[in-house]
Structures are given as C-alpha cells and as structure tokens.
Length: 169
Image (cartoon, rainbow, N blue to C red; front, top):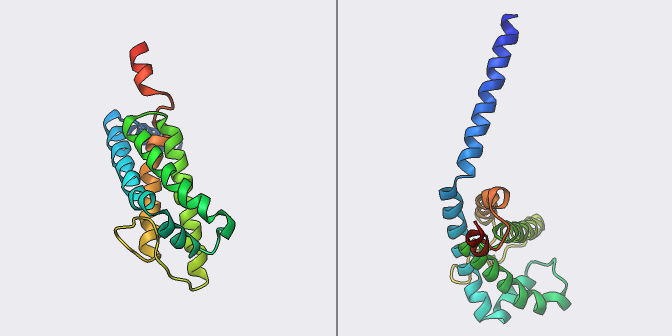
C-alpha cells in the first residue's frame, strides 16, 4: 500500500510539472517573444536571397538534392516563403501555419546538410547570405534550435487572422 501511494505521489508530481511546463510554453509573453525573434530571424535570412536569387540558386545547387530544373523556382520562391512566414509570425497572423512551414523548411535544410556531409561534401550553407558559413554540426544544431523555438508558436499559437479575432471579442 505504501508503494502505491508513493507512485501515485510521483505521478501527481509529474503531472504538475507537465502542467507548469505547458503553462510556461503557452504563456502569451513567451509566445510573443518567440514569434518576434523567429520572424525577424527568417526575414533577415531571406534578405540576401531576395536581392540575389542567382547567388542563392548557386548555393542551393551545391546541396545536390534539388533537381536542376527546380533550382530557379526554389531560388525565387523559398526566400519569399521565409520572408512572408517571418512577417506573419511577427504580426501574429496565422502564426501556427507560418511556424509549421518554417519548421518544415528547416527540416529540409537539415536533411540536405546531413545528406551532403555523409558524402563528404562541404559548402556554403546559404542560410544567411551575410554570414557565409559552411554546413556542419554548428549549422545543423542551430537549425534544430530554431525548430525548437518554433514549436511553442506551432503548438500553442493561434491560427487565425489575429487582428480580426481581437476585434470580435
């Protein structure tokens, strides 16, 4: 009987810890900070790509996973996706969808980096044009951290046109 009450106490303690974590991760202030930080990061990441799509196309070609026929489309579309999703995150408009799109984009970049590194290929990441950094463990870890920072807005954020939903309340 004593061990059952002890395990019940542990379970209750774990449930309380989970509730506290959920409360923290769903905090309006944390979500706002993460949305703004990640929105600005992706808007900044898109800047050079938007200005110089041919340079970005050349960097994307180095990944060896994108068919050559799609490179011009990727070089033009992806920076706009990053910019628009970053902008939507900052404004809290469809933030869950924007966070999901950005997390999937990051997962694609991570896959590309791991794939190339597994074949011994090292090249410019293409993530931030002004940094000119090579792919490697650091860029993979950074992108994993970015995905982790996108998870609270993805899970707890809103997925509506926030400006309209405020007026209705």
